[in-house]
Length: 313
Image 1: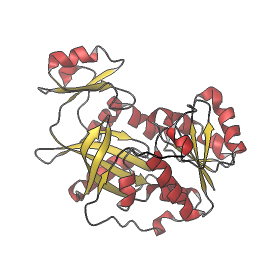
Image 2 (image 1 turned 180 degrees about the horizontal axis):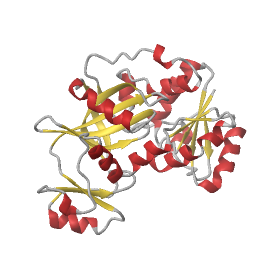
Image 3 (image 1 turned 60 degrees about the vertical axis):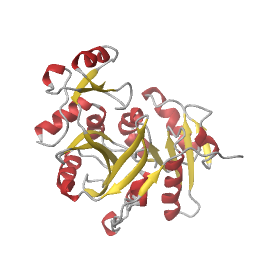
Image 4 (image 1 turned 90 degrees about the horizontal axis):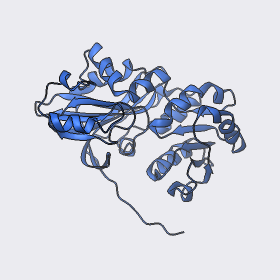
């Protein structure tokens, strides 16, 4: 079996986790890292590398043919900006027996549009943080200002007063405003089956964050929020691996900030804690009974520390 990770960049923990999942199904399985850039770190650590065309609709046939030439069975998209491309063309790839591990379009669109995500939460009475294009709609002393679309950490303004928030918003393309929630950052790694039913999820505190990525994380049991997490994710009709970013305020109320419809940068901690999301995705795609595989979350806290490492070839 051959699994391709698109936008592989320097996502070495993802490559390693994907290889481990694939080897459970096929001891001869291999991982192909693909990226538009020819000089990425993953090029040296995957079984094979492909400098692939950009994921634009004009390149669909080129990418399909490139996958066929390389005998690709599965594709795992790893970047927010490419998810809609793979979801739109999932059936075209499937007709060539290439399985794309990506959620349906509607769920991805909710993840990518933070304003639509907040409106969804309001309609469903879910604890998604208040979000508006108009700062006057947000009742707070301090604000978070970010782009409506795309990665939440890009050009973000944190803890700004009203005047500073408006100045920062003027530098953004499609700014949105949220209240600043003080408390503890938490991510929720989750996996949903092809029918958008939640199989399992793991909470992890983000204890040190750099450039939007968690450097030190520790798992936690927060079962008091389980029903809300299930209602939210199943309501979004997501499938496969997803990550929720949230805050737990000083009153222990959970506020969901955003959702990423893909495997996250620190989601390898979820795998170590029992949420075997990549293996489940591959297994389900092969038509096997996913409900027969137990979810046994680790009963004790587990800490993950992410750091740079030197390799010599």
